[in-house]
Length: 103
Image (cartoon, rainbow, N blue to C red; front, side):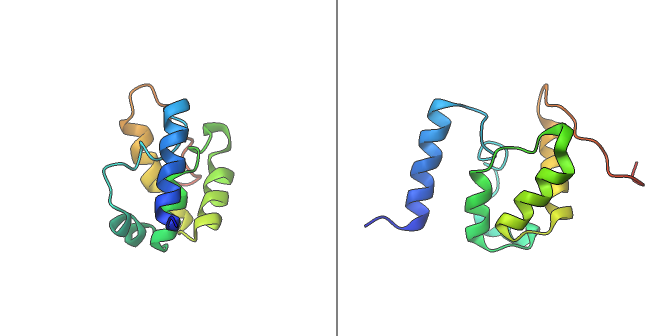
């Protein structure tokens, strides 16, 4: 019997094999689950779910981040900041809009 973690990894491999760049797995590859969970304020299982999410769409950044954060039990601001850093460091990535009142 497969554990939940092994099933999630298997699903990730299948998704990435058919559509590279589709999931946040690539964006978060350098972080281990426990570290990322601590940074986002969510359980490790939430990080495994996060890796299977599609990146937030630039035009719907705030709504997408809120939905992902609610799904995985993360702090929305921490999740948004982590994903913004990835978007800023990705070649050719669309930069998401800045929240009101920030520079």
